[in-house]
Image 1 (cartoon, helix red, strand yellow):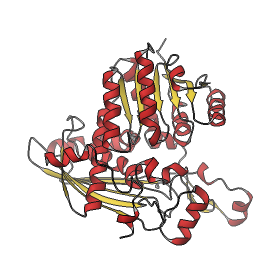
Image 2 (tube, rainbow, N blue to C red):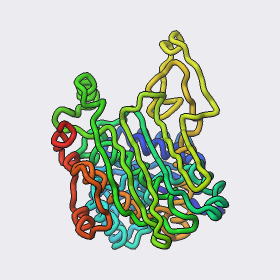
Image 3 (spheres, one colour):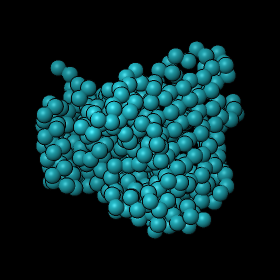
Image 4 (tube, one colour):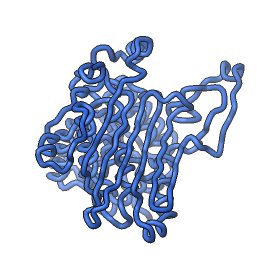
Length: 417
């Protein structure tokens, strides 16, 4: 009989629910426990788990107790809770909890200091780890690499990758609060786009961090949610005041990488926003190599539906069609298996197999630390309005303790200037 990983989940919000949908599609994981800051959320999530036959979903009072009864723990709680939760998990391991592994959802942490703390904690406990960056596991991303492998070997690797994630804004108040989330859209979604760019540019067969980051230029702007009507709407709905503690709703930038074997310089452009005004969540990636290219757009679906005004007024459930959908009428794109499309299914399958075999997931926490460094360097570049030299040891040292002004709650100084 095949081994099954008994997974404990910390958090019962949006991402936990999305991951549960992914777990319905694989066989080697069951949700054995759940912990949430809100008892009602934990109970509701537990019921969903049981109803769909993906585990017992036992609600535990705290993560320390849950650690005694599961094989691995996935931390899906808000960014500002991560360090404290992982400290408790590691303490439970020291006291005898026989955990096989630890999963942390992206972004790993709000800044490099916190990310380094999480890596150090896991290493000290000799825990296997997985950093959950779902977009690297997207089937379109993996398939284009396979399809274009002969071209890469013959003509050379990709030289430019552009990656974007855009939607109308997060679900929960803490996401909008830069002091709790770690910033705005660069922290929340730039981590995705930066990772995808680095991954796709990496020559076939080389390690994840083979390409060396050379420099980064970036811009962070507040284009929609800083305007008075939208700012007031945000305050009313989410309780976050962007006149006082704003975060960026748009970011774009360019990272230059160097191939240490050939000296070739390649570019990864990232663009992310919380002000996208089309059907809903869009992931867009494209890449150029010598004589070949690829393009991915998740708003291109094999299924579209049309809903007229009368029907829309009778039934309105926009997110059934697409995550972060902004409309319930008109011509709508429908993605009928979003967890699989966005890579959640495959990242869970990979990690479960890895933990059961006694190894790290494809993306360990140390990789999440490197992505955090690049995100923080992006904020630094935007703040200082200059390209940051990532080969400078002084810059690397500064990044260890750097906290962006936006993350400090001082975003008005850079976004309203």
